[in-house]
Image 1 (spheres, rainbow, N blue to C red):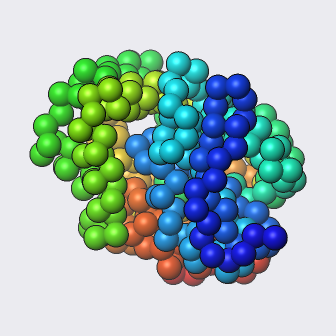
Image 2 (image 1 turned 90 degrees about the vertical axis):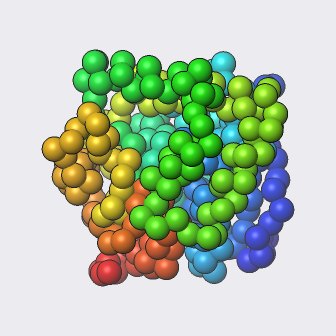
Length: 291
């Protein structure tokens, strides 16, 4: 039995190359939290700590991220999804609630595409994949995330990129900056990280999920921050709004509810944890969701 205190990071060997680091806290129906492109499992710390009062909360570092094994030669959305399916098998878990942020939401959708009965419910937070890109747009994004471009970014550009993830940068998120600066102290570690971001971005573009949304069988809660500066891409789609992208994707899901949260950016679950946590709990209990 897992107690309600946050556990120290644990590890599971999913195959001969991959070790996944995770935390496990709480009891009840199991939630699997899947982080996004530039973060790790700590991105959900303000959510799992609260929701573990009612649920078993498992946060993972995806392969290549955080304390998990460092690899990027196999990176794809299907690879991430497959590794998490193996992870759940090792824990002998049946149905789970999948909660994904940004790229993590795209991975969650790939998971239910590969294994339709895996999840009882989906919570998609600022999901990647609702915004679609044509071939020329994909090529431009790929060119802008090449490792050399990322490594050449100045300190000011990196800080600006962090700020763009939030409506107002919260003090609790300072660890994200510190983690990045620590990575930059080691050339090998930062080279790996920049390569990982490039491969993961390319994977998101190469394995879109918009066309899969109509076949999703689960109840889905979609949460966006009204002031998300990353979705839509403001250079490629200047005429679009976060709400228009959110509504377009939500409309494709047969059983879905959209929540737009005011005064919140791309990391809406970190900026407005109480609203997001209450919405998730209400959604899973079948109650009305109000802000």
